Length: 156
Image 1 (tube, rainbow, N blue to C red):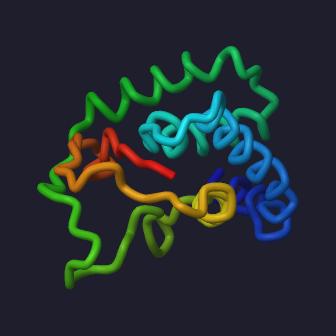
Image 2: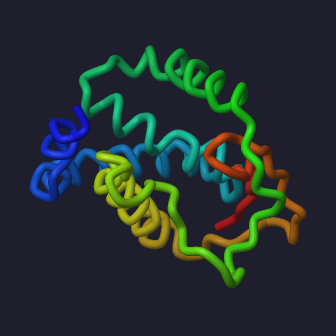
């Protein structure tokens, strides 16, 4: 199964999905900036939604079902707490292994990286003045996947 999934998410297929990722990212920025808004919660308005909306659109799942899928996946990650104590992006230590490694790497890692790269690029392009709206602290919830920032107030 892993081999089949890996072939289904090869570099060429991920590249073919980039227009969908861009469109979803742009739709989310449009929603965040609707009515002339100049501030929002980046997690609730963008980062929490971009991967899910992209994947469901690629799979042909109706947008109306996205909230139900978010609740299901949230129920899983909330019921399997992780062990990371703090978000330390500049720490010395082991490299990032969020997509696994060796034989146990995630077959969707190429798509995940593409969503991350396109998502950041669209934010930089569409909201060039994007900055934190507060100095923090930023709440972190422990999940099986590690510590997850739950809210990130920003302005542009």
